[in-house]
Amino acid sequence: MKALIIAPQPFYSPRGTPFSVYYRTLVMAEMGVDADLLTYGQGQDVEIPGVRIIRIPDFAVFGPVKTGPSMLKMFLDVFVLLRTIGLLIRNRYDFVHAHEEAVFFCRFLKPLFRFKLVYDMHSSLPQQLTNFNFTQSKVLIGLFEWLEDGALARADAILTICPELAEYALGRAPIEDRHILIENSIFEPIKLKHTGKRTAPVDEPAELPADRRIIYYAGTFESYQGIGIVVEAFARLRDDCPDAFLLMAGGNSEQVEQYRNQAMEMGLDGHCLFTGMISKALAQHYQGLASVLLSPRTEGMNTPLKVYELLASGIPLVATRVPSHTQVLNDDVCFLTEPEAEPMAAGILAALDNGEHRANVVRAARALYDEKYSRPVYEGKIRRMLELLR
Image 1: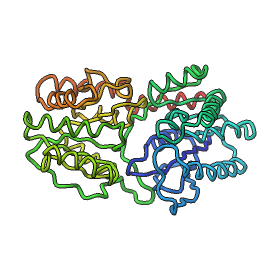
Image 2: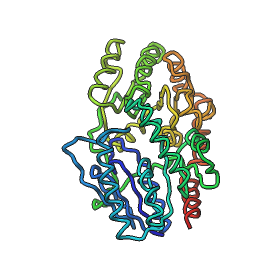
Image 3: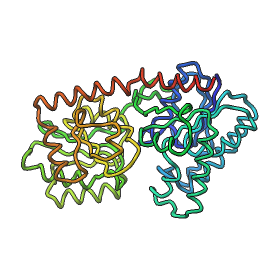
């Protein structure tokens, strides 16, 4: 089978771009799919045998492409559309695998070029317009809802990435026979093109205190991530656990300064480190040094991609009891707490306890990952998707 994969994002970016496009493409290529992958100009090429990466201009003068809807992405998507049409004219594709908003124009191109269409739905784009404060216009939101409903109706296969999003999609259209829930749950090292080497830390690891137990968070510092709650929770547990050390990786310079100041005001100087944005490889290096891992979200529907890796890590996870977590996690596989400082402090202390309960939680987490989210499970779902397209 020959496929056109369209990924309107900076691909690949080791400093935070979701990696789902890479793993979707990798597994399809391993199954014999001959693919062209069309993406933004920004990002690093990766080595996937049988896959040709095609880019629009990077337009670096406009700055980096950020997460969520933006005028820059809308501008770039015009060039993605034009390049898509050119590729469809010159090539015969069995199917087009459209990530996110790319499906909005692919649904209109489908009858013209007679390909089958995969809608890789990582979020509800109408909801993103308000979640990222892009617009409150009912007209624009209504337009995106119409486009989304049309894509769901016309796609030959619809992929969603978490149960909440699956339920949302199933509620919008009768897609039961065409829908597959494929969590972004595999996280193998990514091979950069031409180097022949796996990605390695490009940042120098910070020197961490050897006699302290590391409580570790890695991710964005957006408001819904609950970073302020983590800082306050850590301040509350300091007296009960003086050998704990808080390591916070991620965030832009303004965000890091904000939470670093909060930590200093709470007397945490010398007891925490804010690294700013780091490579994925360095984030994984730090993870291996941690005693407790954190996922402190305060809201959201989509399960964080990192949750699956954290489940398989062999390190206890403290996560908040919000829908984005509880659709995957439960009290057997992690330490769930309310998204408030006091219960989070209690959850971290419980996760630091080297007793039988901690060992049982870690063991159950790994068992859950192996049963529902491991590579063989992932491959089975991709295989089912390809069967829908034959």
